[in-house]
Amino acid sequence: MADMQGLLERLERAVSRLESLSAESCRTPGDCREVNGVNGGVAPSVEAFDKLMNSMVAEFLKNSRMLAGDVETHEYQEDRNDLVISETELKQVAYIFKCEKSTLQIKGKVNSIIIDNCKKFALVFDNVVGIVEVINSKDIQIQVMGRVPTISINKTEGCHIYLSEDALDCEIVSAKSSEMNILIPQDGDYREFPVPEQFKTAWDGSKLITEPAEIMA
Image (tube, rainbow, N blue to C red; front, side, top):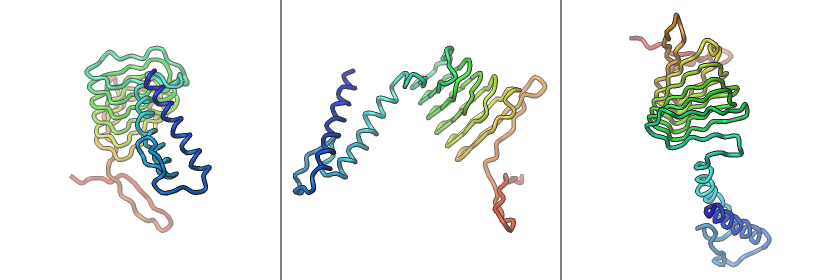
């Protein structure tokens, strides 16, 4: 609570400073006071806002356990294999940040799931109506028990996705990632299919055609 009060006071000072600067037609150089660690002037005061928003506000939001009532967060968990979100709603977003060597199970149906900056992390979920995003992570395993329309993998090294029979129409979107594999259920087991990492592009006379590049052994 004290941190929030301090944050509000700093925001009020910055707002007051910007209002006073914008109301003045001129100002003597060097007559500008400091706002949030940045010396005066209109542009530096805007910079002060950026500095403030990128530090204290961001830290407050990152450490919140529940944002706007709709975002469930799990952060900085390590060596935990008992993480469970059992009470879920359709509008809910699950945000997992900097978890390592842990497993999370999400029951029911949620709007979307975001895995950000995690290592050796496993996710098991029932249903997602929107998208599952994996960002800036390493050694991720995802098991879909029900349905999900889209899974996005971005800037990630190592991602294994186990699809259910009901999720075989899921679209996998990847960028700047490596060691991605999709595991498809077949005959009571899973068959692994690698996601292409290299592509070739050619001009066909009217447009560019891009397709996976086959690497010759």
